[in-house]
Image 1 (cartoon, rainbow, N blue to C red):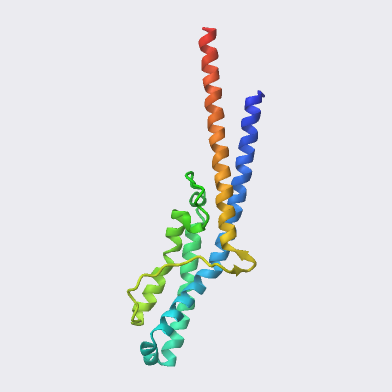
Image 2: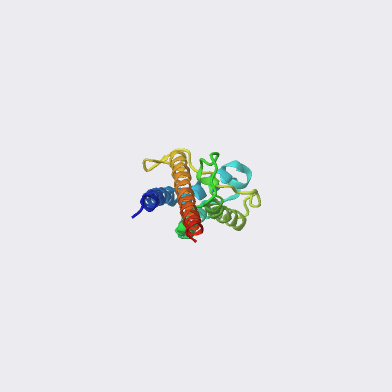
Length: 191
């Protein structure tokens, strides 16, 4: 094996190791979301309920209990749907990265899926005639520890490793190109 091939093999191994670490971080992110997404629906509906005291006073206890049961059930269903969609490994390895990307929200493909949690909040608000039923809903990533995981730090590490993996891939492509050019130059000289 030539020195160039050895270098390419080492770069490939390094890139794959980095991608394995990125996939592990994606799993950690999904674990946080698995817990937080249903809780988000509960937080958002409670906020909406408490923010509209005139409306809240008209809701009897039986209806309130029904809303809370619906929140729990719909939260779990929405979470399962979102986590299932996030299991696509291609979502987690965009090839274009910048130094400014630090949050998981900076991965547009992933975040677009996560934001669909708002549809569930809106649906429940509309079904029960909440005054803010048509207000936009935007999920914000938790900025507190969830089962010893801190999403802001995980997001920063995810982007750093992804940038390193993409750089390793770029170096592999460059090495292949240089190797090919070298063979063509040698062929020219030998002819």
